[in-house]
Length: 272
Image (cartoon, rainbow, N blue to C red):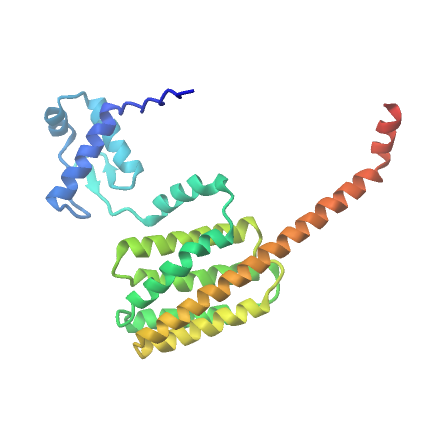
């Protein structure tokens, strides 16, 4: 049986205008702080009503491309969007796809190594100090669930600091997005419980050796270390997820046993 193709939704005029404005911004090479033409000019340019222009500008504001200011000297002012809204939308898209650590690391093993090598010789003294300070903060944690959670986030932040220095914005975005995915997995799966000292020690060691390799601008050493680091981290993540799955199975079995022993459940069965 031939399925009838689902027709594509027809774009609203405001959406078409917002897309055209984005193309115009790119072609004119406009930058943060520049102003778009006022509402009256846009109405004349597109031959549409004020409400349609305002809707188009609102779309751009929601996408993080402009800031809308009212009053004298107001209007639509260009704003460089942060990566967070885009990352959040992509994570929402993947939220119900049941991603696991292995699937994230299929990409992370490749991309994180390329990012690490791309910043050799590009880390300022301040950036190197930030990396060293991150390692110190990771090593100063105490036992406890909340501190373990903070520990995992700090370890991911080490890699975000590298991404900030990456000359390739697409590679930087992808690596930071994968870090966000791992952060979500840490929270959802409570991947900081139980405490995993071996994982902590391995992360600290790799991070310290990476900083040393960066100070020496040793590209091959950086490549080797980051490749080993990603493989080791994936192994720990897989072991942790398996452990968490076993714990969940035990919890479900315990709940089932408790239901069998429940006096209320016994009375209900007798009533039947």
